[in-house]
Image (cartoon, rainbow over all chains, first blue to last red; front, top):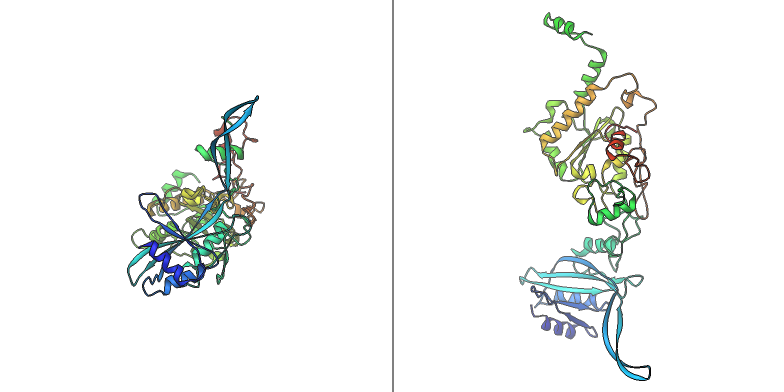
Length: 209
Length: 221
């Protein structure tokens, strides 16, 4: 699939949308399209109904949690030290705020092509976590979007039945988020090691070594 | 009764027994399990009841669809935290005498899903288990072995005295706390009366000694 062409097709069909090409540098080279939240629903409808693409099957929807990242780089800066100008190395830190992401894998049963990978990103990972639901376009996304809502906490606007699917309704956490803290019920571990050893020591099951 | 005399009498065509033996023989020969399965272990449980392995030979062919008519709960499969309260409620609804077989790695400890956020780390956290079967899943032979072990256990129960079975002991509880869905975990996350394993605060002396004291199989409450 020629992503550049699909991108320009989308931009021609949906006015005012912004589509970004996300390149995958790994050997599989499965590049993807990053859609903007406002136009994602219309773009999805276009991808499904366009006679050339006709991506009628959404095989997989999944979520990714991207934490805030901090990158540091060393920069040489000229500074006055004791009246003499010297080159001093300075570490500059840049913080990139994290976000939550959903990924859709689309195929065309009729044209026998695919997958086209779509990405949607939330504004942040705390309170602005709303994305448009693509369930009205591809029915097969219904349960998987519910699962992402359950495990990542992304709210899908326009989903017909957005409830938790794996955990109970009273549950408050989102277990697949990277900062999820699980309940510590490691009090009985016959052969603890690595992370489990740490957890069971915190639970008091194993004597400190 | 003297065993020699009993054998001598039976050679003469006279059958003697005790009420206890007769009672336990009747109970062990008609243990009716509750019809329910949770995961892949249930497939093995179904296979055990079918013609090739034929659990009916041991008097357990009648899988009851209601807990009110069942004697045995075979916890066959992964117990998720979402399912655990329902299982405890089903156990509570079974009439005494009642027994539990925890079948497979998941039911006894959480198994391969032990570290998961949604899987209960063993059903013996909430209900007393009589026989644990390891395996993933256990073969039908293993389930039959567990069933025979349970029959032996029933056979050995004396009807009077301090170690009488719980259904003859008014003090012994037959219902256990049904956990509630909490904000982060089930509440309580275990029944401390059942699941009293050693922790750092209670562990004095060797681990083996304290494990013998609170062996999971023996205690009923």
